[in-house]
Amino acid sequence: MINWKYPPKRSLAAQYVECYWCIEKKQGDDSHPFPKLTPDPTAHLIIAPVLQGYQYANESVSFEGQGSHWLFPHCQTFQVDHTDAFILLGVKFHTGALYALDMSPHQVELEHVMEVDISRFLDLNRHECVSDAKGQDFSHELLRLAKDAPETCCDALEGVLLSWLNQAHSDKHSLLTCKALPLLPTMPISQLGAQLHCSQRTLERSFVRVTGLTLKQYQSMNRNRLDLLLESLYRRGNADIDWAEVALEFGFSDQPHLIRYLKSTIGKTPGEYAKVRDLTIDIYGGVEYS
Image (tube, rainbow, N blue to C red):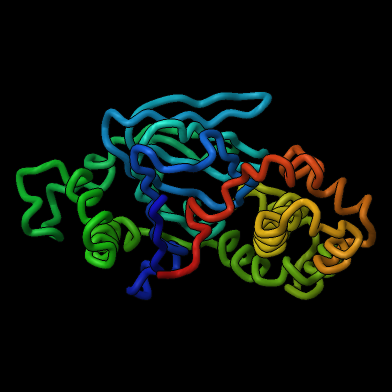
């Protein structure tokens, strides 16, 4: 399994994009065939070969298709099909970023995956960001660069995104949400309204409008704690796990609290996860910067 992640270089892109990432599984690679994606408040634009299939499924819904697609924010864990060789190039957006961007005629939906014609979406005829891609399928060229020259790939991808990002517009709802987001990991929700000099109801309504999530839903998706917890469990042998110690280390009141948290977020108890270790903790924008 090969993967990388780079942050945006231009300040305009950094306002909306958290990172560019890539994951490639080659034939014969030894990896879990059906990993799971933990709940994620961010959206991903995923560029893939036209005929490459994808599948995201959980107990209530299944999305199947081919080629490039949007993976929108999701509160439930998705199981993905990684049985065959594949390559994915992704753009991970900041939480709520798509609210400020023109997604017409489609709107962002929670728990949803949507196919996209990537060349048409980026209006590539008006760009010449990769000189040797003229006359070729641009997504194919980006995927080639993702394998051979990751930084060049990111520069090219960012170049074609800029005209779209330059059309973004902020309003009072997005501005208020941007102020709330950095406070949520550490501040009680009940104190946020007073901190931001607005009513709690106003804050809640603006936050849902911009992100599609309630404040409580977002706070429960504390990516840093969940990712670090899963990575810690992933690296330990079953015999090395002291669950009471793990609960204390990651800020849970006790072991039952830890069990309830993992059961609600990933659909497994800690013991069940430790046996299977099938969560995607190192891809889809979750690797360290290259």
